[in-house]
Image 1 (spheres, rainbow, N blue to C red):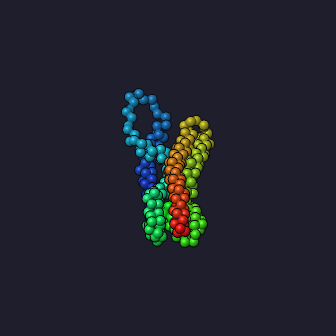
Image 2 (cartoon, rainbow, N blue to C red):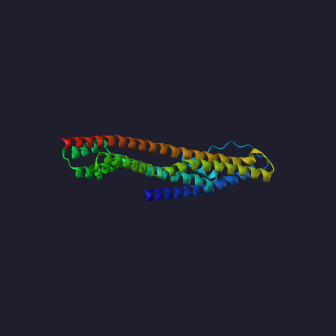
Image 3 (cartoon, rainbow, N blue to C red):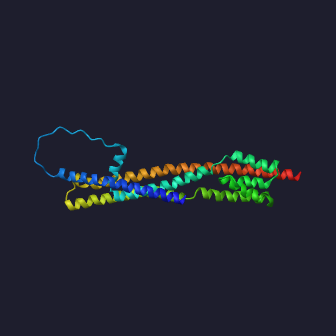
Amino acid sequence: MKKFIALFALAGVLSFGAFAQEEAAPAAETQDSTIVAEAPAAPAVEEAPAEAEPTGGLYKALKIKFIEGDAGFMSFVALALILGLAFCIERIIYLNLSSVDVKDLLAKVEKALIEEKDVNKAMEICKNTRGPVASIFYQGILRLDQGLDVAEKSIISYGGVQTGLMERNFPWISLFISLSPSLGFLGTVIGMIQAFDKIQQVGDISPTVVAGGMKVALITTVFGLISAMILQVFFNYIMSKVDAITGEMEDASISLLDIFAKMDLTQNK
């Protein structure tokens, strides 16, 4: 999974690097043409308005805004989004692989323990089944010969271990959710500083002077908030998966203890 995260992050960084380079030249030409347009010119005969060129869709619009928001700084926001998504996808894959048919597993274990009275077969069934539920079953059955109380404590303790494994990398996802808007707000402060620097240099507070810095400030904030919202949606989905699997673990543990109690009653007869 660590290799998957590294490859995903590297691919994302390279794609955004190409993304920025592709639009860097057009953005520079646009700025040059804007400067020329701002210079005073002699009155000319009015011309018919030119037809608007197609924007190229949402993808091109996002690229343009990415460059206008300062590609160097916006890359940090994009990197936070890419790394956050990498951890989210890794958790989703892990949790999906952890989901099993609990009822079917319980039926197999109960048949092995109650009908066949074969503890080793029940352990083998749990060992060959993926997921935290099967791991908890294995630990409980492994200590069944030490008594029902010991097996119950083992199930409870190992349930906490499995919950910790499912929640691994959650701090990193939370970090990138918090970091994305923080980077956006940092861009806002930088854009405001740039605007005031231009006011100081020009000695004028006209909208034309401060527009560039304000634009950078607003674009970085928007991208930072969008990045945080995307990661938050993924994180909430992951949390719901963890809660669902934890509920299955608790229900299955109670059912397994009931099977152990049946075994104890059968042996005492």
